[in-house]
Figure 1 (cartoon, rainbow, N blue to C red):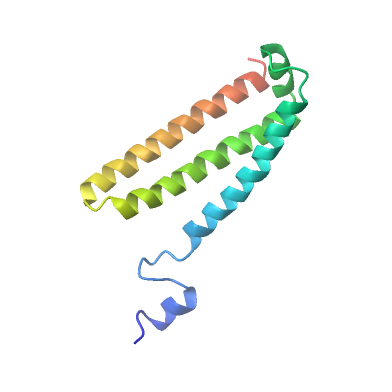
Figure 2 (figure 1 turned 120 degrees about the horizontal axis):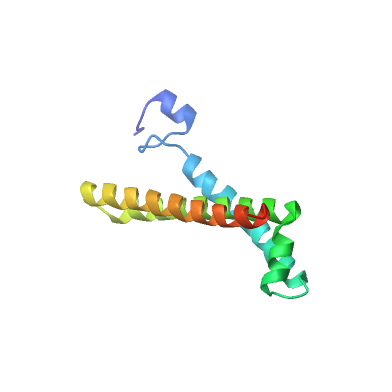
Length: 126
């Protein structure tokens, strides 16, 4: 027995009508996180020291600031995608689910904004 419409099967949409976009973005951000974290760890290891002056001097270079900004965006996006799936799967009350998703969005945006602002403030020498 087949479920759904012919158009739904062609588009690859299941019962949730959302396809694989969410799943795919989790994988893309995971790969991005892996690459950027390897860059970040390697960069920190190669610094002469982890004191304030060394790190600030390093972070004021565009070659350091831009990938770090990308890492922040990718990590927070991946975090949000993963927790969204968890909340949608394990919270069954629609009211609780809505509040939890709103809190997740607020927390993610606030955390990312603070991190981005902090890096930009250092990178731009403010």
